[in-house]
Image 1 (cartoon, helix red, strand yellow):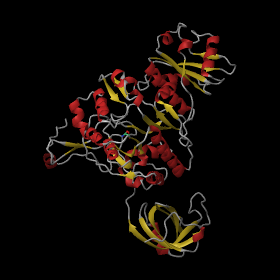
Image 2 (tube, helix red, strand yellow; image 1 turned 90 degrees about the vertical axis):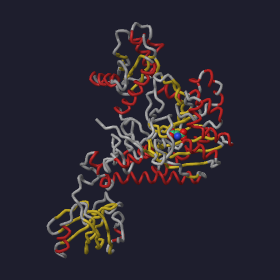
Image 3 (spheres, rainbow, N blue to C red; image 1 turned 180 degrees about the horizontal axis):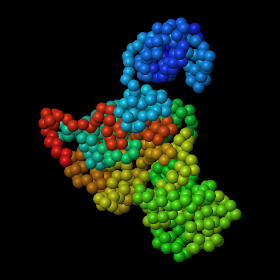
Image 4 (cartoon, rainbow, N blue to C red; image 1 turned 180 degrees about the vertical axis):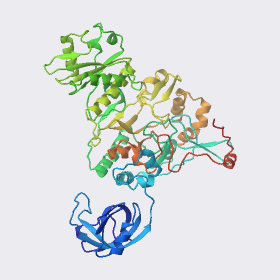
Length: 582
Ligand code: ASP
């Protein structure tokens, strides 16, 4: 129907006869002339209708409402009033014919770069929100990321294999989404939280390099910016050690940054889990800024200040240039760390003043000379503010980690268009859960211990390190993986430590352990969160903006209104009795 799109006409097309199709974004009636901005996926072109030359045509143009769908034929003409901010801004199309292809109701919000629509309204009419250039650009970026991922991995001999979506429920990890089986009354499928076991079976099958852009499902309690269904770039390789996996996927990430953002991110630095925790209180440190933790125990204990003396750990950060913070601002920081989510009981601060002296909130207990030593340990300069937390080690570290990020925000050190990627390596294999009194797999139960740590399985499981790694960018975990166990007896041992009985392990994961008896190659892999990766590459906060049809914060699709009740006969067929909601 059309000869061109609304995004491509420029001075080179002047005097050409063209036909465009699109939506009426806006129209302006200036008496003798009517201007219409016609929009499609590619851009906006200005149409002109002239009362003097064709009154009937101009009259019908005036009747076009917002979002009407039209086909217009006309001549490309140079604009007298040029708009150099848009690619088609030097021309306009003088219309000779117009066909109304469809009319439209007035949209519930303006479909422009800055819309007046609230979140829920935009989700309810997502197909209209997707007409907005910003949202459309996000989807284009996602498309690019997917295409470039496939290109890179295909070039490295990876084969994309689809794994099933109706699988089996397993207790490890998050909660499963469950699907009742009509043909097997009382039995259920689960939707995959990841294709983990299948990709390992593909390695046993000899596929050697696998990937899949795959939907995964986790029925977790809702936190901001989580989606119950999300997409992974899921990968697995055989005959590899950790180093091979890291190098292969560092290559992928570099490829994505260079093709999608034209950024060379260089070599990705590495940090052990222990160092990340010690220096940043966090296994996904944001390295766009420094503010490393400084431990003060030796310096400050035994001076009569009970908070420090009774603390397991006294730890602080030096905040450059924040010494001029007012009392009100430091009070705000204290309130910040005292919030239940952060959990500290208070905050001590010391200002490195312009004259070189240090003034603190605990001057009663520390004299000038002692405070001077603080500034040496913190390596502070005049104008800096030292912030100190004390207490139980894990709590103090967690609170200071939150505070560090908050200071990064306040000092605008977390620019969304600056990227600080990092491999975090040497994760512990297990994590003790005091509530349930048992070990949990820090990554998942298929993660291999470092070979040299295998003897600790019996004696001191908490000290075992795994060949497990995360890719962190700007404080966000973008991907994670590990070298896997490929030996049946080691896998059995791992399940035992995780509290599985022999029978449970066999009934839930027997298929995998049996496969290990038929020649399993050494293997390992990784999975990246595609939605999250796209939002990072797009310089945005929310993954929702990079998903065509996302769910809202309550896990609902407000457009199709799901989840929803189903008719009784369907429930009967599935042998499901629904408890009456009270
Ligand atoms: N399946 C893992 C996950 O979803 C990733 C991996 O170990 O490859 O986190």
